[in-house]
Image 1 (cartoon, rainbow, N blue to C red):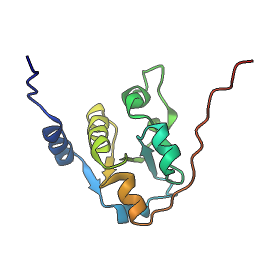
Image 2 (cartoon, rainbow, N blue to C red):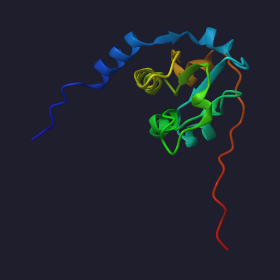
Image 3 (cartoon, rainbow, N blue to C red):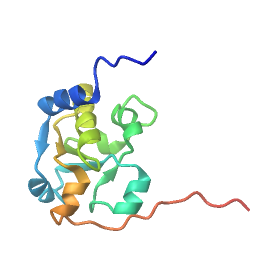
Image 4 (cartoon, one colour):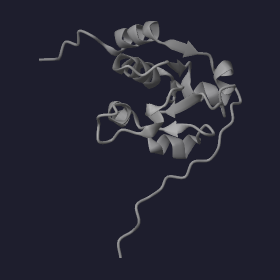
Length: 140
């Protein structure tokens, strides 16, 4: 018997986008290098390696977000314990909308996400730098 999903991704995205600020990419480009903003890259490391990264962005894999935000977590990161604006982005704007809404619900503020994500960033000519994945050292 197939599953009946009562709260699907479309409704989740609509709710998230109503709850948080969405920053147009042209405005987001002006945030690079600002001391009062943390650009949070939610993409998988393979995406960063393939597509590049925003200069100065903090990489937080989406699966670790809640654990890295909560100061009581053994995995808490100091980047999320600052009094700054947190601007999330992913490849296309879906993961970042959900992540920003989750972060806001946890109490992180202020939060926003970039409309269209990294794809829109590259298309708009935003700065991109190479990312080299750090691989575990080989045994022996």
